[in-house]
Image (cartoon, rainbow over the protein chains, first blue to last red):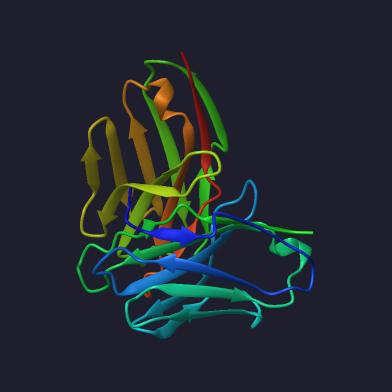
Length: 114
Length: 111
């Protein structure tokens, strides 16, 4: 167990809907990153938040947005869902500045868009 | 942009064999590299983190090496067991600690 939790575990939506995924970071971690993992692929970096500010973004459109809260929990929001958004969404927390910045992953949220 | 490649894509070995998984990356200006394990439908479990100043890290039957100059890392698993069956992913960060992953090596250890 990494101490990183995600909710919900599974979710089914239809095309065009909006979805919010949640992540609770490991205690004391100041950074959260979100990844999308399509079936049979490695995780793709979506964005990262450091102390409530976006700190880098991968090649994802603006309909993917996020928030990090003062307690370092985080949300990933996806608007106007498309079929290709079906994937496992992973969040990872780390303590930037610790010198050994291992990322600790949550179990993921599996999203199916119909 | 960092590109990470892992070979082989899949590997099947009998129990007890020693094996090597390979990872290559295009941008050698990394400051660490991390190996993960992923069981089907699950999240990622960190196995080993190698800092750029290190050449290898060991944890139990696992040993990971890093050669920045050649853009390569290897994960060595000694005396493989059926419980080692999983997908193994390597990840290299850019300067913002944003990890770029390979597509993984799917390992099956046959009893």
